[in-house]
Image 1 (cartoon, rainbow, N blue to C red):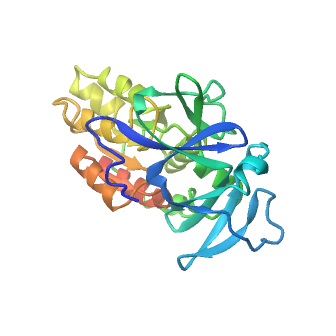
Image 2 (image 1 turned 30 degrees about the horizontal axis):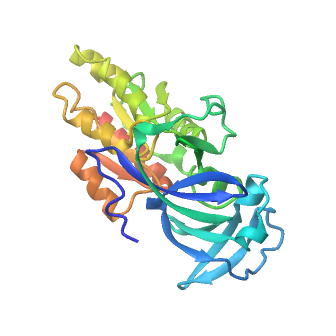
Image 3 (image 1 turned 90 degrees about the horizontal axis):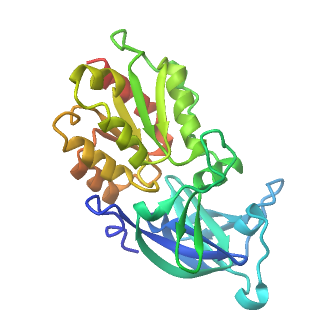
Length: 304
């Protein structure tokens, strides 16, 4: 699968793999998908949650299968779809297959067409939906796959044990403001908690890159104000309305804002995507398991 075409930081576009769970429409950024395979026999995992259907070996990797029918409490129509399909994804060192009813195809769209679901808010940490794409005859819901994985007790190390052991430079002003752009309430809370544990007091979180951009550009006009109120931006890559690459590009192309350090924090960090971030001018790119490295690099930038 060619993932090089998935992102274009000049057009804010993505490709969404559309699939059914029961009779409901869902989607996943195709950049997260390694392949789609037919249902195969599984080895059960003793004492695992009901949603963990079992494991199988594929291309010399042990793949854990999560049944989205169980997660979403939706039935599979076996008469129409048989046993369904596996959408295989690699989340850093973890290979996971999501059991779906069937795959419908790929939808090419822009992040600006994806909206915030009514159930998602800053206070809603339990939602597993991060966005929805509206079409004339249907709505495709985009799931928070990282949260689904973590809720099932996978070791993705979003909250490393050594956050509190990070060496803090004595030159950092913790009253300076940090901006977060993250559409997953779960991951946003992880970031906020980590920053607070280090000592940062003023953290502003936004559901997408557009909201973060509106906040940052509103601080233009005073270099001192910008330096204090936007000390750094930490952004996801895939978000409704505006993705992290576009957000980075807008900041770095602005004469007043370009000195603001921007860091990408995403499960999509791999070689092709790193090139997109570099061309946008990002100051650092970190996978989800590199939260400690992200905080350490942030401290280094702010201590200068």
